[in-house]
Image 1 (tube, one colour):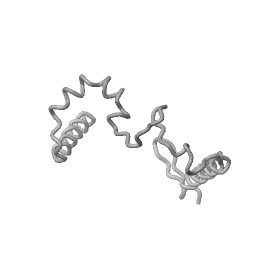
Image 2 (image 1 turned 135 degrees about the vertical axis):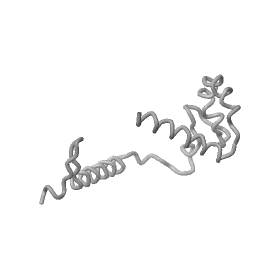
Image 3 (image 1 turned 30 degrees about the vertical axis):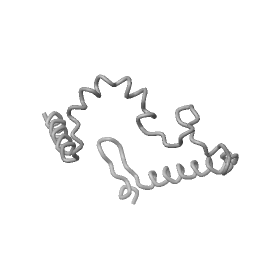
Image 4 (image 1 turned 45 degrees about the vertical axis):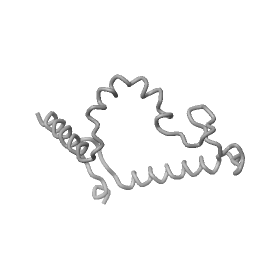
Amino acid sequence: MREALTVLTGQGYWSPLIWAAAALGTFLLAGLLWWRGRREYKRGTEQELPFVSGERVENPRVGALHLYWGLTEALRPLLERLRGWHSGVVNDYAGWFVVVLGVVLLLLLL
């Protein structure tokens, strides 16, 4: 009966009972951490104010341009070259995805 619940592969074995026990253990550990967590949160205090990247934010509407400013500034030369390819049409992006996926699969098969 034990062999019926175990699938042997070239990479090891897969047992649904072991995976179920691991998932249950993970949920129990997460529940324990949540239960033992701090109870200091108070609604209506400054704890509800936005805190982004180590700075207090006066305007709660922080866009991606502000949040990722350092990254976009460091990659500005690359982003400027890629801006010409940006059309805003989803069909173009899906087409590029299919082309790149085809090239990757071709490389993997060779």
